[in-house]
Length: 69
Image 1 (cartoon, rainbow, N blue to C red):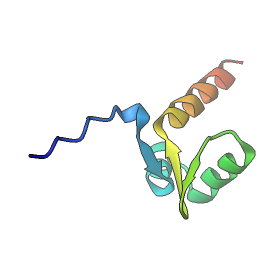
Image 2 (cartoon, rainbow, N blue to C red):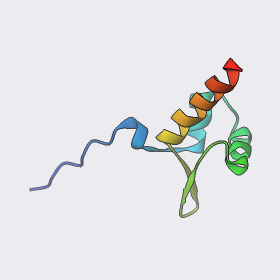
Image 3 (cartoon, rainbow, N blue to C red):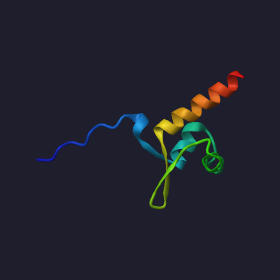
C-alpha cells in the first residue's frame, strides 16, 4: 500500500522560469536579469533554475510597495 504524497501549498512550490514569465507577463530574459540582480530569488536543481512561490509573492509585494511611493 502506498501513502499518498502530501499536498504542497501553492506558495511552497517551485516554478520553472517559463511558467513564471507567463504568470508575471515578463520575458524570460527579464526574469534572468531580475534573478541576477537579486530582485527575484531563485534556486538551482541540477541545471534547472527554479523560482519558489514565496519569491513570486515577495516580488509582487515589493512592486506594489514601490508603486505607492
